[in-house]
Image (tube, rainbow, N blue to C red; front, side, top):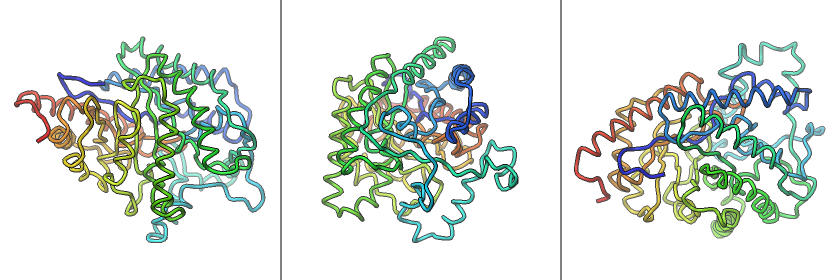
Length: 414
């Protein structure tokens, strides 16, 4: 995951699913009938197509778009024992990120509107409000509940994902691929716990279970990406509940459990992704990067993928003037954002790359994105045409930066 000749490119993994896949996933989420063979066939062809598009754009390290997954961490329950999928009970409110975002109190009018806007979708032929006679579209979303011991049973699913990606890579003559998996802390997700005595027991069980998926991906010769958005976007809430010392103990333990789950996997096959949550909101309560960077660098990974194009965090490239990137490690800064349909100019991307090169060195950078463009099958952050335009801008910006950085004396940290 390093190059001494040019700036390589990648992204965070999740891309906008085709409508045919989304329709079947919606049926699965509602426990409605669907054809599994049809799903497998559509999925395989969709991965072929999305891999081809990534190589056409000239992305160097590609993914399967997370096309098989209902969501970046929601899918975990589907691959574990101990869970039931059911409708919310009378008076029971399904867990939601919007109930735990601290800045709701600061911007209540915005979040009331945002909650409504999220019901619309870039790919929908008409907004849900227009389907008032469609009972299925108005059906409540089901919830996952843990009712027994967690263990891994997703061997067939992960092998399918591996086979689909590797087969598509061969057809497209793609050189390097990765598959994302949630970290134990983030895999906790928003499901209801009715079995474990406390969060420590849940996290331990998840770490022991997820290590099977981690190892399967690395053993297949693919890069393993660990997604851990909850490290940053839950920071404020953890402090409010536990205090500063309790939060620090909690987060130290979560990193310890992640490293336990990664034991035995070569570091050079691991990349660790952190962002501040995918929603397009004010983000005024986000924890500063410098506060959590020590935790991030404790993870046994070769590369660290960190949100950096978001205007709330773009200035934080300067943190690397004070914190040295460990020797032999690679930084994957986000250089285009998933939070806006504005396509970044390639010169802006190149400028951002040059900033990072000035503090960590040109050979230690891979150009990436802030987050996925569709964190779940039904949360589409940008229009799919914009998604590809952004990746194109990322590639062109990397080429521009390469020409400048390799035409001048070796770019190293000051």
